[in-house]
Image (tube, rainbow, N blue to C red; front, side, top):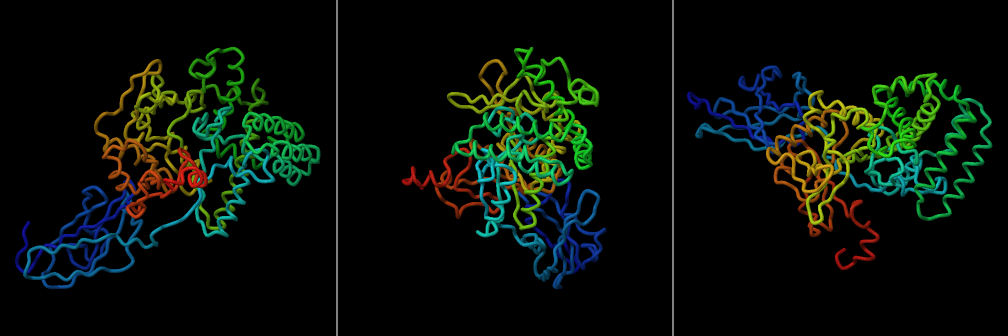
Length: 515
């Protein structure tokens, strides 16, 4: 519609890059077309992509018009609004007045410096052969002294006997290697008054024994910690361990995953003795539907399941202690989500329909990369609102303030290879923008953690605009960007290295010509 009779069109163009899925942008102001300061009658702004929103309203020409923008959720509730009132003076000599501006968020633009280090690498004098969750507290203290605000770690989920943190056998359970046995001894000495001196002495001798090797012996550490944790469990006694009110509350809070995981561990130990395809949990004689019966009191596997609960509970307590220490000191901890889970995992065992078990993930090239884990079945995941993803992220949120998505390109397309052969292809081959928006929006609303996507490699052109539109940070590694750090986008994690290349010191010492 054209303007006339002393009116003109005020065209608003707004840049608002941090809009969550389901949220909308509105303009509210003094003019009647802007709702007369009534939120319920405000002007809706239309998203045109790339974080841009446009709106148009007829106003009186030659006057000053006051307005501000706000963001509303799917129910129409205001979740964020600008503090200061904007003013636009229109000129009666033109038909259109255009305002090109950016949303003024009430909080300061977030910028932080941090350190990236795997938990396994934080080995201290108190560690038992490997960095442990409680060692994060020392990193927090160091960060407060050096002015850093964030600690990024690698995945910490149980990966079984595989030392790679990206070979998760559970998306919920924590890795037993990261528990500190001496702290578990202290817990029962203080809360139950049990004489733990024998186990404490054993834990102290293990620290001396395992820390003599400057390299981390993963199999040795895992076995020694299994033995001492079993000894602590036996010393306290199954009845007292399971009667702990704290453990019982944790079991209740973790009901969506912990019994299935415990049953998975119980059945895994059995399958290894009688099934030459034990690594493929779809061949097992028991299914996840039996988890309740397999972990019930009086069942054959109850004792072993209690030991699983016991270890996971103390891992939770120790990571939670480190996370709270970080929060109290104003330090954020950033977790990491592997792009996939292994075929022999409690996730595949419990919900096989969520994975394409006839294929493997990988990457094109010569030779072709075959990562060995099954791609996600996104169609099946979306049928229940991506419940598995939502549970996974809500579980992580009790420890972390942000998380990194490994190979975020996999949310747009994945190189899928037949399980028994080669010659893969990208799936899907088209509609990448739609696929990325749908998949990432589904997980974006699951938690309040900041999302950072690892967008390295052969990046399709659809990826950067979608990440920008959703407010998801990308990754920029200095040596792979020709050192042009001044060209980085605001929504970016800027790093000198990552776990796929040499660390800073090695880069400087051995590759000084390019450093």
